[in-house]
Length: 83
Image (cartoon, rainbow, N blue to C red):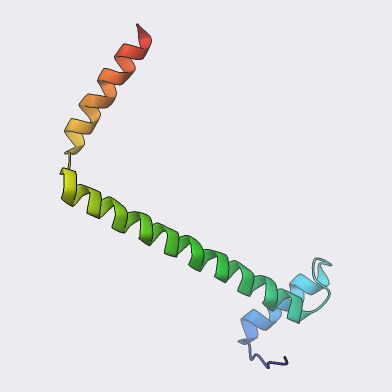
């Protein structure tokens, strides 16, 4: 499938610099690589949002803790581990 992509002059210069460095054979490879990175970033964002929603649901079920409560509990765990 052929798709034409128009890049800003800055992006065009960057893509050509990537090709010139030898890392890519052509600008199309640079664009495909960029799209794969975007795809991965979108998946990480989706996973993060899912985890956030799960954490919010858990907080609604079991309650929340203050930073001070968490710090105090962490100190207890550290002190117990040192014994």
